[in-house]
Amino acid sequence: MAANLVAGLIVVVLVCALGGAVYAVIRHRGRRAIATAAQRATYDVLHIAELAAEPLRNGLTEVAAGKAIRHLRTLTGAAGIAVTDARRVLAFDGIGEHHRDHAAAAAVKAVAAGRPTVLSGRDLPCDLVDCPIRGAVVVPLAQREGALVALSDGPPAPGLVQATAETARWVGTQLALAELDTSRARLARAEVRALRAQISPHFIYNALTAIASFVRTDPELARELILEFAEFTRYSFRAHGEFTTLAEELRSIDRYLTIERARFGERLQVRLQIAPEVLPVTLPFLCLQPLVENAVRHGLSRKPGMGTVSIVARDAGAECHITVEDDGVGMDPAALLTADDTGADAGQHVGLRNVDDRLRSVFGDGFGVVVETAPDAGTKVSMRVPKFHPGVSSH
Image (cartoon, rainbow, N blue to C red; front, top):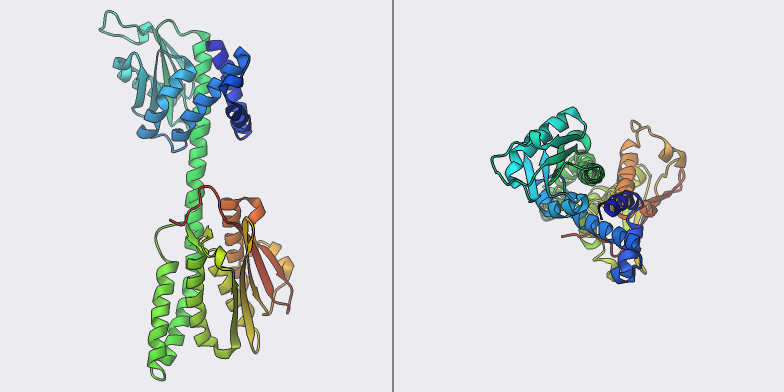
């Protein structure tokens, strides 16, 4: 069985690289449909690895290690097993738990050396006359953040050494993926902060100036604009949630446009065409609002005379199709392909890239923004948003 587990572990690495497709097929067919011993061993290893992967994708913590440890012992075939961080044992399963201190000390040395270590019985002194532990295999995890310690009830065999090494390598891959998920979440939060920084200095100054102009001539309108401004900023600077609904985003956009219409008067016209069935669709927070601000700030504010911003959201089966269009000054399409963020349109470029990056990160590369523009021909920005997407919720 140990040989089959080792062979299966190699399959685990390959399947993880291929996105788990083979496992999905095997799981769908069911264990009873597997005919040969090799196929059964492969299925068993893949299933156990799947059970261990879920908690490990939360990082190397005491809770995650505690949930994964039993499955890791099954994968290695060890009599006992410990998962450590750089200082202490996080979780233990099997026999020999009285060797926790030895396991922790051996892990610290192996992590410092950056290479696996095989311990004999002499390296594990014990006061128990009938102690069954006769050796151990210690393998550092990736990036030296901890180690896997497999205890043996006999001299550590080559099969245990190889199985522990492969399992530790696989655990390291799961931890790296966990770090990638964490980094992606940090990046998403940083991108939202960047958008907030982009919105605040320009809009806040202009909004307060517009409100001040009505304080004496139309106090009721000034009061209404102050309330709209307060609600707009409350939404834009909220501290929780990476996602929102289309309805919430549109409410904030309406407040923004109310204030801008107070500034521009009849020069700014707005056209909305929203299908009611797409209002609950979930999309990344501050994903649509920057596009509307770009249309007003970069498209229409430079245009003499009247200008129109059109926002359309329509039902397209499994997707919601959204467009933000203005009939303003437009721009050179080639400018969107440059990396120069220092020109007059730098804020517009950053906002478009930010929205495009977040859409692709959440929904996949097929869901970025599409920009149609030309000098003096306005700008149209289109996006597609899935109505339902796993792991995406506005709550």
